[in-house]
Length: 331
Image (cartoon, rainbow, N blue to C red; front, side, top):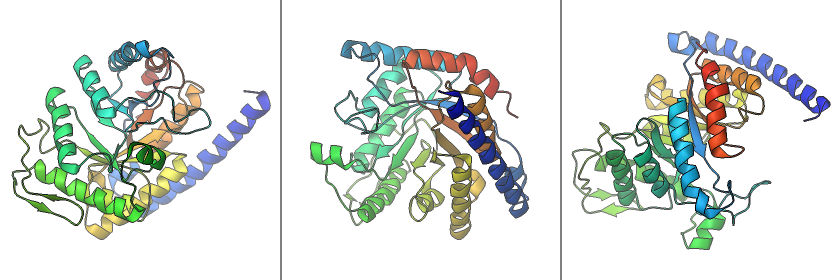
């Protein structure tokens, strides 16, 4: 990065910090609860989003295994994979790059680890029938010793859906299906083995034996920041939210919206775990990342997912050495 570019980045960061400070001051005026004013310890999750490094297909499995082991030893709290079948199309990635099925990959990681929470970030609601999804997550929870988390969202990647024959339905219907999926999973994880009758799904028996080890059920995390539908579903159904970490200011606004939805539906906002997918690479500028992590902590965020921007084993090792010890100092 050139010095002028670096200088502008510092200026933008300083301006962002000032704007966030003003917003946080406003938060303190709006809410006098201790939970609105204290900082929260921040954990890190490793979001394993890319199987292209190293390039040799035969190295995918051992690299995934070693990255997971190193991450757990370093102190990462969670390990997530994507729920895609084609790689996302971005300026740096193409649809025909390597991608593994998410829950199969998590089962592999479960056998190699003992402590980290495991889940997809996030399950696309159109990819699995809700009854089968509940069984899949239950299987992961039982085999991992109670470490599964159901991350779920409305799904969006239409190219892979059309490519693989997955039905593409209007956005409004996807959200209807998402809410029914949440209801079905929770019913299957309860004592109620009876039928479920919804608009889109009908189940004659919601039997799920064995039950998950995590009681009352694996935590449900809804991914996305849509203000009218997604965050309303969080307030109604979720144990956790996952927001896109475009900036602390954006996350503060989304949490304001979530708080308002909680008030409307009678939900205790403080019972929802707040997580963020961090976009700022932690190894590119560790100091800037730590500053931003502290800003997120002040908003009540307790987990940041970080994405490898190099060899994933090297990434996990260096984050463990250079970032996690400093992150632990945030009080």
